[in-house]
Length: 291
Ligand code: C5P
Image 1 (cartoon, rainbow, N blue to C red):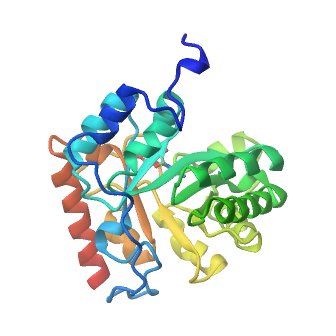
Image 2 (image 1 turned 180 degrees about the vertical axis):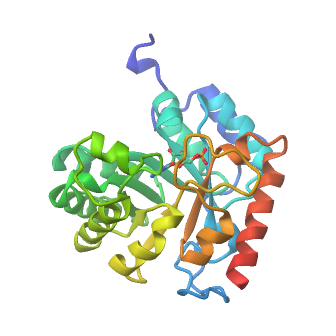
């Protein structure tokens, strides 16, 4: 195994990192955030950062290294407004993966922080300074952890002169069924009850939104109100594989139920033409927004 000092770090300009990050298309910084709401949402005005149909789609860059990320991003060509960097890629490539993903889209850092408040606050501050536009935490970390994260994002953004990232909390992973929850000792009368309980805690703690499956969006919206965002993974277009997701929906079902941002991984990465697959999803989203 390499020593940690050999891994590319955020400020370290290794030739490999620069070459990979530049790639074929990556020149611009994150796109500017328009203030005017788009027309057509039947449920609530689109929030800042979610105005255009392409800004309602996050592609999960669940790949093992920077080379694979570069290859996927080149094939996507900036078609979606968001790129999600998760555990697999960040564990391999760290902040260089964030920088690469941010060249032609906003970055959603999905590391699902869950630790003592002081540690989570430090992680949120680091991610804020790295310029991510959204990040995830586990709501199950509790009120003190969520509040510490919120305060850390505020102060790190002010100190660095960057925009504060949205903090969104995971309630119940979309791969978990009620039986799986019972197995880990969560005594709940259904997944929805647990999701909604945690969604209320997220809103009370002043976070920006919740990660929820399409089937739970309506219940979550009641708990968090129209100002907070709902991020929805487990999206499967008709006729594609469900994989390990349990609570899945099509893009139009998710948008129609009130999701703000859809997260899609395997149906795009596994397609022979990922950009075309993403464009189809965006067309579905546009259609659903128009109602
Ligand atoms: O490949 P697939 O479309 O299932 O990818 C979904 C993405 O959303 C993955 O990166 C996964 O980690 C993430 N996610 C999820 N369920 C949650 C939170 C995040 O599937 N509750």
